[in-house]
Length: 115
Length: 112
Image (cartoon, rainbow over all chains, first blue to last red; front, side, top):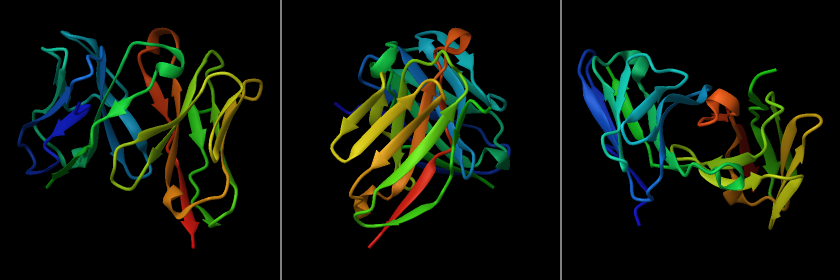
C-alpha cells in the first residue's frame, strides 16, 4: 500500500518551459488536492478535485491547470513556468467524510525550481 | 480575524519541558480540527484530531475552546524528536466544505 505517490521529486525548469506533476493514490479516495508551500506562507491550495472528471480552483490557481481523468490520479500542469512558481508542491487525498476522519494523506512533495 | 492563525514561534525549549501552542480560527461553524506535524522538507503528517472538547495521546493533549474559537496543543516531557513545525488545520464549511485551511505553523525546537 503506497498511499500517495508524487512524481517527480525534484525538477529544475527554465522560464517558459512546461511540465506536469503526477499524483497517484491507491486508497480509493474521492477528494484530491494540490498545495504549494513557500517559506512564511504556509500551505496554499492550488486546485482540488472531488471526484473523477471534476476539478475546482483553490486559493492560488493562476498559472496552473489540473486534470482528474482517473479517480486515482490528479495531474498538475504548468504551461509556461515562471520564477514565482518555484516552490514545494504537495499532493494530498482524503475520503469525503466529515468529522474526525476528515484527514489528509500527503505525498512526499516535489521541489520545483524555475530559473 | 484570519481563518486560521498561529504563533509562528520559534519556540525553543529544553528537553523535558512542557510547551503549548495556540491556534485561533474564525469559522464558528467548524466542528473538527486537526494538528499536523511537519519535519523540515517533508510532508505534513497527522498528529491529532480534535472533535469534541479535546483529545489526549500519550504526551500530547489537544484542547478545543469553542466559545473563544481556539484550539491548543500541549506537549509534555519534550523530546529532541519533537522538534518540528506544528500545523493547525480547520475544515471549511458551507460552499467551501471540500477544503481545509492550514495555519502557517508553529516551529518548535527542543534543545538538549
